[in-house]
Amino acid sequence: MKIKYKKKYVVLSLLLVLSVAVVYSLFAGGQEVGADKTTTVKSGVIQSTLEETGTVYSKRVNTFYSDFSQKVKVLNVSVGDKVEKGDIILTYDNNYDLEIERANKQIEAVTATYNETIKGADFKEISNMKLNISTIEGSLNLARNNFEKIKDLYENNAVSQVEYDEAKNNVTTLENQLQEANNNYDLLLRGVSSNVKKQYESQIEEIMVQIKILEKNIEQSSIKAEFDGIITELNVHQGGMTQPGVIVVEIQDEKNLGVYVEVLAEDAIKTSKDMPFIIDLNGDVKELTINRVYPKATSSVSELGVEQKRVRIEADLEADNKMKIGTEVDVVIVLEEKDNVLIVDRDAVYEKSYKEYVTVIAGDKQIETEVTTGLKNDDFIEIISGLKENDVVLLNY
Image: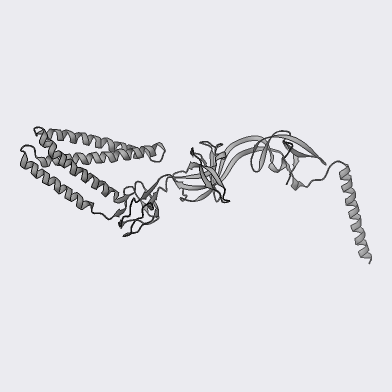
């Protein structure tokens, strides 16, 4: 019984002492604050950032469709296969070779008729020369179109100087060949009746137009890789039929990659080219810069079903990176950064009557202090005035 009594006495004594301490603290004008509820004003770096999930993408993509249903005669690839520029991906079933052969037979027939009609220049040689000129003209048109594509890609840093020069030189070479062929043709036709020449030329030209159309159809009857890449989508099989409007095959350049994010339009206004664009894939951090901010916002629906206007922002990856197309990464865009400024935890600042305050801990007192703030992020706020370094302030959870 004495032991129980002593314990009860001790407990009552402790409660009495604690009560006196609390009353004294209140009358002294302060309240003890736990260390975990305060923070210290310090000098450091603060950044204003945008944080989004980004996606790795290829900057060079070839997507092929079929305008109508066609049968696939030969298929040379599967999804994931690597291809080189010029490789034939697939060939459609066709009989264009037979039709070209028939057209050439028609040219031979016209040539024979001409040789019976006129003496002088060998019309077979004339027709072959004209056919050669037509072939060079066709190749020159293709080379010029290809050069325009390469030029656009070169100006956007998507192809190398070597590819650009190669395309340009190809156009110049064909232009020279065409000039030489025209000169030889003019020399060959000297002395031939202009009326007879026009009559038979018109027949030859009509047949050559047919051949050109057939050759164009042959070109469109197969799909070739326009650059080194990887097959990322394939929706046909050998012997199967294509579906109009559905992707037949897609090729992407896995060595020419970038990362894109889509940010809210109101946030995109704050961004600009060359701003820091930091990506983080499982702790592997890479510091890039913004290369492109799209000029147009597009509509998208959030996970909560809210329609939003978002702007696409892109940064280029280094050529030797090992990332895979479609990989998601954490992205931080640094909008503004200040160094060697006073900063404090964001939870320390509160608003009252359109002004901002903190509660400064001075000894055993809590002093409400108005502050002027600057740059803010999710964690810290810049203090322009009202506090000094090492001031201890109350956190407001």
